[in-house]
Length: 283
Image (cartoon, rainbow, N blue to C red; front, side, top):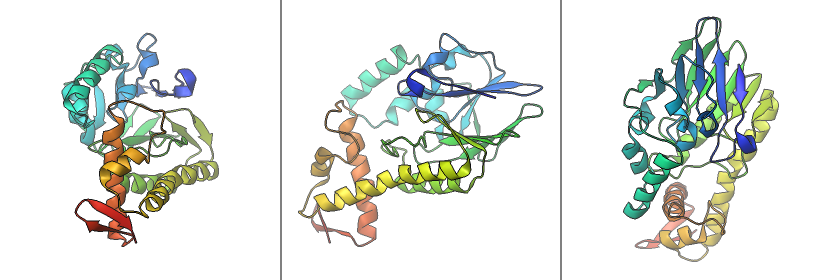
C-alpha cells in the first residue's frame, strides 16, 4: 500500500491519494489533481466523498468507481455536485466552470454506491468502508488490512478545523464521526490534506481532539459575540470559519450554514435565546 502525496503535502486544490495492491486486484482511493497526468494503473477506484479535490483525476480511470450512497448523485452528475454547495445562482455557474476546467469534473454516471462496512477484497488485502458523515452525507474513511491503516479523508486534523458548511453537511454527524474514528485502533492513520500519515492511536487521538476542539472554540466565540442580540447575517459577517482575508462567493453561505447549526445546538442547550424574531442573544 502506498500514499500518493499531492503537492504541498496534499494542500487544496490537491489531495493525498492511496494506491492499494492485493494479489488479485489494485485500487486507488481519491484520484486527486496530481493523478491527472500521472495515474497508476488500477482495477477499481474508491471515492471518500464527492468533492472536486478528491475526484479531479477520475477521468484517468476507465474502471469501476464506487462511492457511498450518500454522495452517489453528486459523483454521477457535476450539476448535482454544484447544487450541493448551496451557492447563489451566479456563483454556482462560476463554480461549475471551475469544476469543469480546473478539476476536470465530468460526472461519472456509471458510479456505483456502497454502504458502511462494505469490504473490497483485493486478494490478501482488504479495504473496508467506514461511513463518517458530517463533512458530506456520504463521507467515508477506509480501513486497509492487514496493514492496520485507517484513511480518514477530510477529517484531516488541520488547524482550519472541521468543515460542515455544505447543504448536506452536519455538525452533529461530524462530531459523531470523529468519536467513531477515536474508537478504531489502527497502526497508521492517513488524512487527505497536509497532516499525511500519523503513527499510533495515541498520537492520532491527541491530534483528533485538537481538531475537534476547533468547533468548540467556534461555539465559544459565537457566545461571546452574542452578548448583544445578533442576526444570522451579522454572525455570518463576523465569521466563525474563515479568516478575514478569505474572499469568494462561498464564504457567506458557508458562514451562514455554520452559524445556524451552532445556534440550533446552543438554543437546544438553553445557552442562546431568540429575543425577537431573527435576533439571538447568549443567556
